[in-house]
Image 1 (cartoon, rainbow, N blue to C red):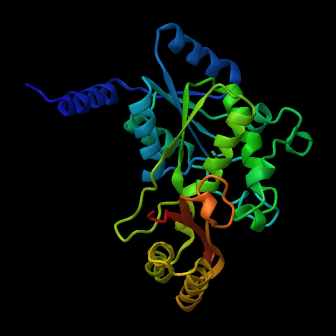
Image 2: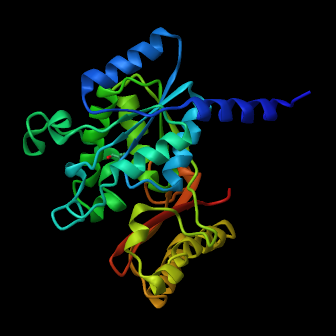
Length: 301
Ligand code: PAF
């Protein structure tokens, strides 16, 4: 008799076999496809991305498949979340390969809108969404306007893609919390699910920007994860947050990183760690050559 797990694996394989990816570019088409799924009684999971997909993104698709009958992904390199000197122009656009990966992962629908579809008045004239409670700290303090751009595009994507649940990775933990906040605050009718960070064998969190690392930097890169884990261990063991953060900054600098920050924060409010905002997480961002790496780990209670 097949176990429940065997049946679930079988269902996943069946679904993967019958999947053909439908690629659409307009709001009308994506809404129409989702309306038809809903009329057929299916639930819909949504994975918003900027493309250049890796295993981390595909794990978000797998999570969406666990939570919903049908999966739609979007690929849109969002101009409003890049700073002036950031990599918007050079960000890899790999739509064809990405489509193949999504299809193999069992995603049924890909929404790849042009900029005019997402920003009909142009990015410079768009209505901005901002989440001031969470968006100006950590990466938001270093990349001013970044999370306004993320919040702005995510609200648009949710309006264009009326799914039941959307999945975001915990690697971008601040982004995930900002999206949870705005969905509650603006009563957006979608459930938000977080998915654990997918790591390389040596612990480096998967990211499109890891491609910017040369061979030597790639060897050093897991040092960020190790430094954050060390802070988590020290703080859980009773060491002061300040001391543990400073030790990590020194370790990172010694290993060739240019750290932006290492900070222990409340998981919900992202404010500095205090007795009232447990559980805590350790957040870190650091440059290694041309790559800005970010990561975060929980502090055991
Ligand atoms: O995490 C990302 O890839 C992007 O920030 C998102 C959520 C797709 C918005 O552009």
